[in-house]
Length: 82
Image (cartoon, rainbow, N blue to C red):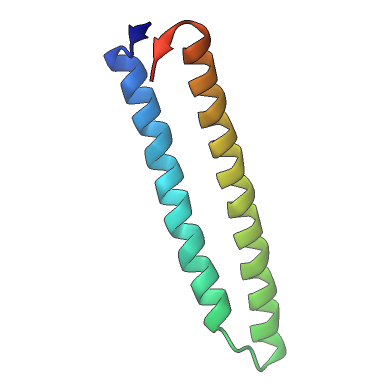
């Protein structure tokens, strides 16, 4: 098996960095939503918006994880050791 080229390593590192950043953002949003105690209708509406944004972020993270996995599989198919 071949080793990763510098470009391939950079590509994987960039994908990993995006995943780490999205994961951190998701944790922060989860904590914020968990600690919010909306009492007014405006606050409840804002909380719903935050939950929707959180769910969109989770979908984006899942998409990035899947793409990272596919990238790894593609490298393995061409005989690159990861």
